[in-house]
Length: 349
Image (cartoon, rainbow, N blue to C red; front, side, top):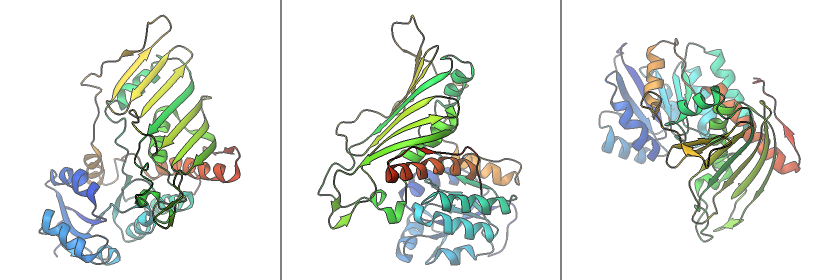
């Protein structure tokens, strides 16, 4: 393969449904992007993905061989968390820009290794996939908080419920397998990323968890089916975060922020923001203007940063990821010790 300096030449490692349905269509809109090679879990699945979506790309058996291709300058990681650290570190050391699917890593130690490696290569762009939750109303929420519409936040309540794991006869989903997902529990990490983007760092947690079906077709499930987290924020607020995969007929995920001058709520299923102050009859819908309306710009942000040759830095970056992985780690440690676990706000590597 001959080098083409004006091309962003991508190698995909992990070509599952998220890559196929969410990332690939957006990448194809960029004429300067060329997807050169694909390495999935097996050569056969790599070949199938290329045949169906990228007939000009080369299917590959091993991801390490893909990283060795000199014409690839960017790696798109779509694997489950157990591969994120190893592939990221290897890709950066091979001189490639890295986009990595959430969740960041198996645990805090791996996340810190990823960040430390990225800092060794500041000329390379690194980005984590953000959660889709709250992107549409992101700027509106930040505006309401910045304008002190609800005053100083003092109580945060988040609920994220599904019934995905109610069937006791079903095999363990890959997100329930600790050897694949590590310490990541349900939607904990991705919602912590959202909360910390809007409300600042979480500084301590006390967590409890339960597993409804402890053995699934002979597999012992160690990741809990539900978790409740009491937490504090650096701004002085306290929070209750509830996550469950065993709630039948669950409502939309919802955030409520109570301040000393009012209340704000975000429905993540509809992206409707409501707010109100004392004297109002109830919360009212806050109109989302076209100027403030956000959306999924993930691929555009990453490609734009690569084209900028390091002048632009997309978010969430690896430091953002370490910040939410600190909370994921602390929740596990709290559950194990049945104790309050403080969280440092300093990112150390």
